[in-house]
Image 1 (cartoon, rainbow, N blue to C red):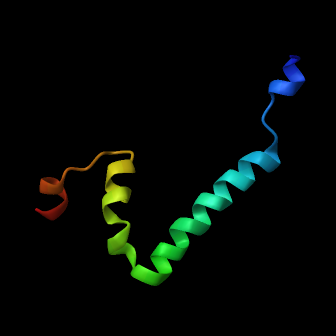
Image 2 (cartoon, rainbow, N blue to C red):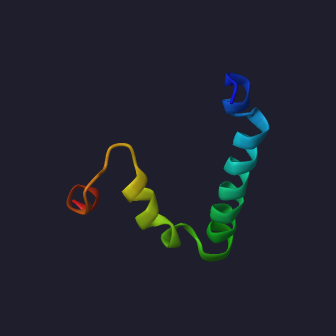
Amino acid sequence: MTSASCQIRKEDILVAFFKRFEYLFDIFLNQGFQALEELYYNSWLHRVTKRSRFN
């Protein structure tokens, strides 16, 4: 295997991103942010706790 065959192509990254984005955006449009809120806070960089979010 050559180093060229191990490289990730821009197109592959974009396909993966937009596939996930489309899935999440459909949920947002049909169910609102509340359906994604737990995922959002679990994935959030700062890892805000429920206690600090609501106080």
